[in-house]
Length: 256
View 1 (cartoon, rainbow, N blue to C red):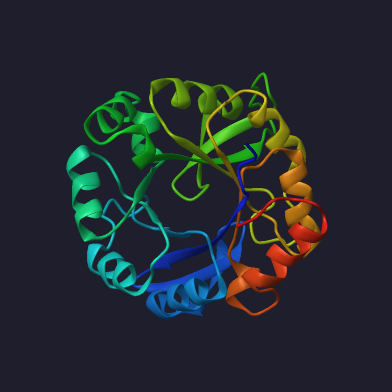
View 2: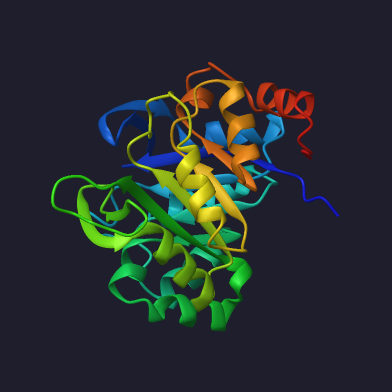
């Protein structure tokens, strides 16, 4: 059976507002998360992802109240990430209305957290979020990609492909792969990175970073993504979820 590819708008939230920039820099306001989530639900989004982009770097928890208000307005699955450090954080977000929880920085610091979340709530609840960039300078990894944390501000020296595989083995039910080099550029997804991670994991793979045209989404699907995620092109009206799904269908990709 062919699994339908999912189209997922992403709400990068800072201080209760949706923001978007290029490579996580020069952020500009993109609107109210509740209003945007409602719009994407009406457009036919398969899921909505909510990322509190400064929660980890500022050492605070995800804004639960914004999550709760957003969850009340949408009828599609809601994935929430940013500042998740414990099973208690996961429990609080699920009770606020999240369907899945994304973990990045805390899992890198303590990989056992993946096992703990999967054991308590099930793998289907846990998305491992990986902000990866191509290595530069003195950094060397086998795959050529490095995992970053704190919104791409810190390198870890971890090989992104190896980390994706390990996270899946520990119990992550899904990998959200974001190219920090492509993020916000609208120049296209990093297809090579998608293919490399796809070859290393069997769990669903969500491609993120770089979408600018409907063709870019088709390319990501053909590279092996099970879902395609974007922010700017949706927030600022360049594309709609329907535009993307129409293009995918026309290219022979099964969508919902």
